[in-house]
Image (cartoon, rainbow, N blue to C red):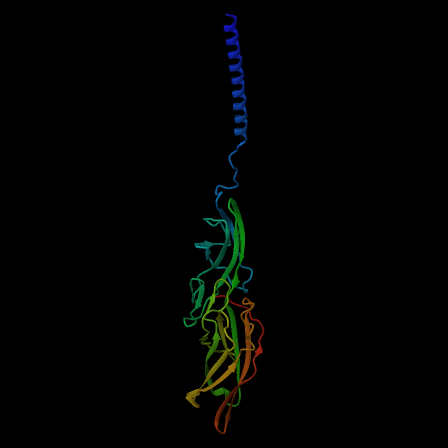
Amino acid sequence: MKNIIAKLSLRSSKSLKTLRYLTAIAAIVCCLTSCVKEPLYNTDHPNHGKIISLTTDWTNRGEGIDIPDNHLLKVGDYTATLSGTTNEVNNYFLAGTHPVTIWHAADGITVSGNTATADYTGGGVDWFFTGSQDVTIEQDKDHAFTVFMQQQVRQLTLELDVQGNVANRVTGIAATLSGVAGAIGIDNGNPVGDPVAVVPVFVRQPDGKYTAVLRLLGIQGNAQTLTLALHFDGGLPADITVNSGLSEKIAAFNADKKTPFALKAGVTVTATVLGVAAEISDWENAGNETVVAN
């Protein structure tokens, strides 16, 4: 009997030790499990980034030019129409570097892909702005970016003072200007494609001078030539054509587009034994003029 009791006690002791061992293991497992926490995120879009504030800075624009009511945004393949100067972009973006391009609708300008093309034949073009930069987006983060808008259309004013002994017979001036940028890239504002010719419309002013005002995307190439056709009273004499190179004077025209650019020259029209001759004097800077937005 004593042996039986001893064996039972031994088994009980072993069972108790086993129970304690298992309990200890369970406690360790429970402790370890309690140390594993759910990951913490900063946003509700942990796998993406979001632009919660996109500001367009329109500081670099000419005097009197209004900020457009709406503008178009492209971030990678995402596009949207925005208004005002600060917006939240309603989209989530994968982490990485994304190109941001902004432009707006303007009369006389058509945007296709990354190219803005001007139609100078339909009464001219309106003011046009673009903005472009690369932004870095991180996942699980909200971002705020500012894009600086650049004026891409510059005003050019040409003034002609008709002089000479038959100047009073001049009734009008027709003209063309070659070497003009017909299109630009909206990502950088640089001319693309081939240069075009435009038709400046010279209007006789009360002081007798003729003035033409153009809005251009810029100049292109190294040759800008103004061709004038002088009309005379009654068609006598016949029209006289004279050319004038402007390349040197407007070589830097594509820089600082927010500042109007003006040139003036004299046109001397004289009667000779061979008929009538016309000559254009050297062009001079006429100073900056105030831009009046239509």
